[in-house]
Length: 192
Length: 246
Image 1 (cartoon, chains in turn yellow, brown):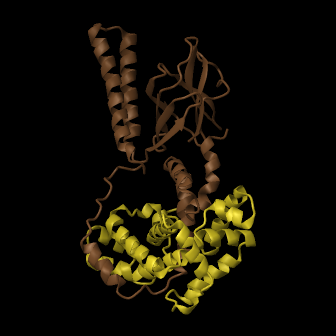
Image 2: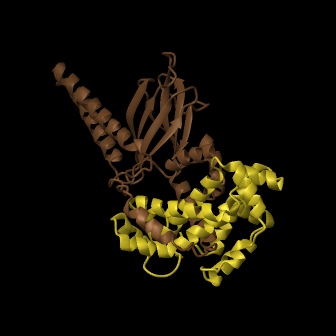
Image 3: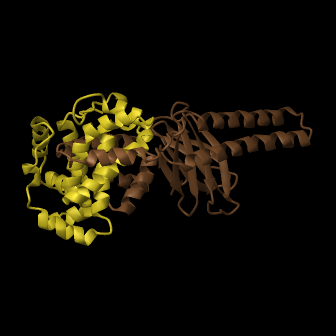
C-alpha cells in the first residue's frame, strides 16, 4: 500500500493537483490560478449542495480557496490525495457554516429551498460519466446506507440527527455509515 | 481486552463525513493522533467522500476567481511543519524534548552518584553502563523517524505517555500522577500479546515514573500497567490499571 501513489481522480484534467499545491505552498500565484480552475467548481458544488443559499455558498468557496492558499504547505501526500484534502476542507467549511450561529434561520431557508432542483438546471461541469458512476455506486448501497450517506454528507446532519430522522438507533447509523463508505470506496475504485 | 478508545473506531464513517458533533470530533481526533491504522482508514474513506463532492461540481459565480486571487495576494501563507515533526499533535515536540531531558538527567544522576561515592566496584559499574545504554536506547526511540506518541488514562488516576517506534521494536514509557499505592504494592509494566506476557519493570515512583524503555515489541502487543505485590508477580494482576493496544 503506497498512499503517495494513490490515484487522484482529480477535478478536471491538467497538471497534477498535488504538484500544483506544492508550488502554491511556495507562493506561486500562477499555480494557485491553475488550482482554482481545477477545484473551484467542485468546492462551489459541494458548498451549494450542503448550504443551499448561493450567496453563502460563494462566501464559503472563497474561504476554502483562501484556506488552501494559506495552508498549502500543510498538504501531505502521505495522508491522501490532493483532491481528498481540498474536498475535506470544503465539506467541513460548508458543514461548519450550516451548524454555525445562524443555525435556526438557515435551517428554515434550507427547508424552503429543498425542493428546488438547482443542480439539474445548472450546467454540469463534471463529466456526466463521473456523475453517473457516483450515482451508480450510491445505488449499489442498501437503502439505509444510502439514506445515511446522503443525509449526512449532502444534508449536513450529524449521525445522531440522521438516526432521529430515520427512526433507527444511533449505533446502527454509525456502523451503516462506515460500511457504506467502505462499499462506495470499493465501488468507485478508489485505491489506497 | 478493549480500551475505551476502541469503541470510538465505529465513528470512522461519521467522522469522514463530518457527521459528528464538535465534541465527538475532538474526541475522535485525539484518538486518531495515536492510531495509525485509523488514520489510514479515514484517509481511504475520504477518497470516497471526495468523489461525492466532485460529483456536485457546478460552475462557480463569475467574478469569484478575481476576488479570490486578489485576496490571496494580500494573505500571508502559513509556514510548513518542520521536518521530523511526525506526530500530528503539537505538544509532541515539547514532550519529546522533555523526555530527552529526563533521559539525559537520569543518566547524569547515575554518573554523579558513582563519582561522588568513588565507586569502582564492578557491579555498580555494570549498573551504570546499563543506565547509559538504556538512555541511549531511549534517545534512539524518541528520535526515530517513525516515532508516534500515545497517551492513556490510568484507572484510579494518572496518565501514561508512550513514544513508540516500530522500526526499533521499542517504546519509551512515562507515567505521571498515578494514584499512590501502599508500600506492599507497586505498579508493574507488562507487554502482553500473542508472544506471551512479558514483565517489563516495576515502577519506582507513582508521581513521575520513567522514562522506561520496553524493547522487543512484537506485532499485536498491548502495553499493560498492573498494581500488584511490590516484589512483582509471575502473571499480570487483574484488573489492569491500563491496557493500551499498540
